[in-house]
Image (cartoon, rainbow, N blue to C red):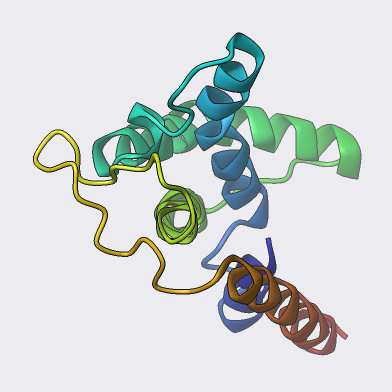
Length: 149
């Protein structure tokens, strides 16, 4: 969520944190199920460009109305998520997830079935990825708070 806070601070009306968060959870359903089943490969189809694209589409088409309804109940008033915000949240969510996971997970094949190669594996250390996410959360959170006040 850290990098998403930076994007939200930069473009608050054009980016949905809720849809971004939904896409992050949705893309990791397959690895979570795999963990429980003891699968040898956790990051399969959902962690390919094709899988991430389909998940992003589902988050917009199915998740957006659901999120609007839940937000409406929580806020006590209708809370629409703009079209651009929904699309950007979903695609930034799934594609950034692919990039960050692709740098650290050995079982990822982001361009399958075209190739089993993962050209970004090891591009950044796991600690570096975590620090980047934490730093962007702090900076993005502060920027968003400043922007909203």
